[in-house]
Length: 203
Image 1 (cartoon, one colour):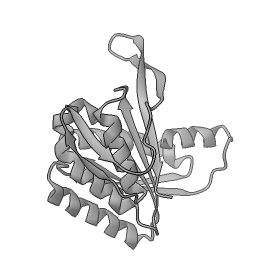
Image 2: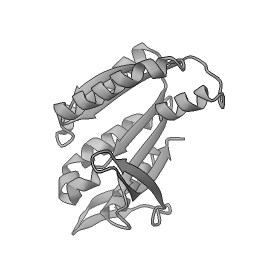
Image 3: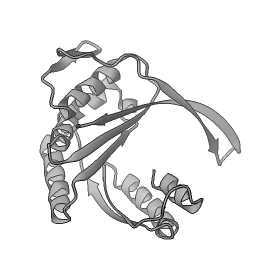
Image 4: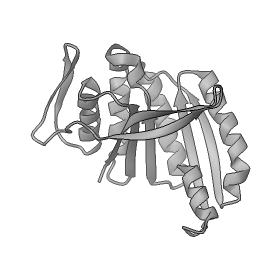
């Protein structure tokens, strides 16, 4: 997303105004966090040339432990208050690979994050990108996160191979998929993949 803004500024499509971004990267794997930090470090001079300054905070956290995540989220919002930040973008991706049994222990943390971002004085957007999984437990979980972010009453619980969700508002139909091509630098070939992109706002 930052690369897109940078490229649009480079071509003069949008104005180059100062943009300060604070990223809190949360992952269970220290190796993944370090890899992300290294990539961002390489991009930083290019981003800075377009007026984009990025501050990175690495957070080693286990989403299956609500207390661990709650402490991390408290620190995140404290950091935001100190800088008078009121606009938030939560990006999550590729958790469906853990299957329902792997994601189920993370649900309390995911809903806790959505509840925190739903605050009326916070302008929040939740961007969720997953490989195409069709109409499945993932869609029901995404519905529950969206309802939490929008402060809509609902009942959510495990049910067999999926989840049960009850509410008075319409739910997501099969979410549209988007195709993209990506290049494998190891074999020099390109492949086409499909992803599901869901975006929720608290208002």
